[in-house]
Length: 400
Image (tube, rainbow, N blue to C red):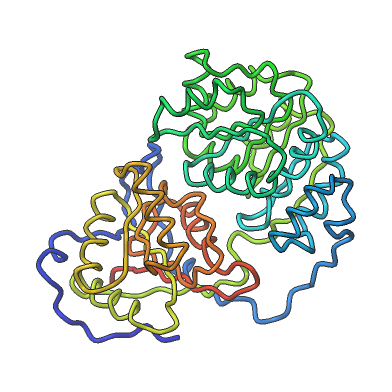
């Protein structure tokens, strides 16, 4: 694809502020922003066929209840992904699990099935799933609900930005599955509205992202209150020293699966779009979004204000778009994401924090309207596309 365009003058509302530089400012986590060489944003998707994974199992082979197998069949699950194929059998045997794998590899079912089998078999205890973002928590709860259909297992989602009253009501029913973000889980522990002494299954998903977002102390406080006789699941896209230390302190004889082989998806074409000033940048984005092949796109900008302004401008230009950022209520974010999933809109403008955990398989393009502050954020953004065996595209706007 070629991304060279004639520049057309954009409305004044779009020309006020020039963003997208790789400067030496500080990002939301207090880290100094990196200079990222634009050449790192250019990479062709792998053209050679990668080795096809041959699973050892089918879902029908797993030692799980007929109800779970029926629910899997209803969802169209037949062949396990590599992370599911390798972790579910030892997890069903009670082993602690460490899974190092990229987002979108089927991790949720890899821990949900062993947990649901243990709970639906009448065993005592409960499961806590801790994730970095609200959206990911809600998606995981939806997956649990679908897989547990007919089991009468109660669940609760405890996340920031949503009604504390509803969460307190749900917790009073003593749910067997609790899914939450670190800050809100810690809030409930301090209020004594959640007690973890009876929780004998703990899942930390996207561990590296939680640590990047500054949740290390919250995570440690949560783990310290859980039952010492527990089964632990740790899933992360990377295994750096922080993740390794956390895992070492809170697991016993874990079974480890390492699937990540490359920092960004091999199935994503990555390129840059050069621009001269804000007007040129907006017009080039406009032209890209008009292309037929851009069927569904996430457009990243750096700040809440920038995301909202860009979303408003795209809507004014006639594009079916919406925004998702930390300044919106949880209900607004849920509705925007639901519209995006159902193709009521095809462009979602987002900040990095709000977009973490978005798992939509048919996103064709990721567009970085502003460059990320750190390269890890770029890796996360690119991982939103190129899923389910499809080729994705990632374009990064870079100022001349």
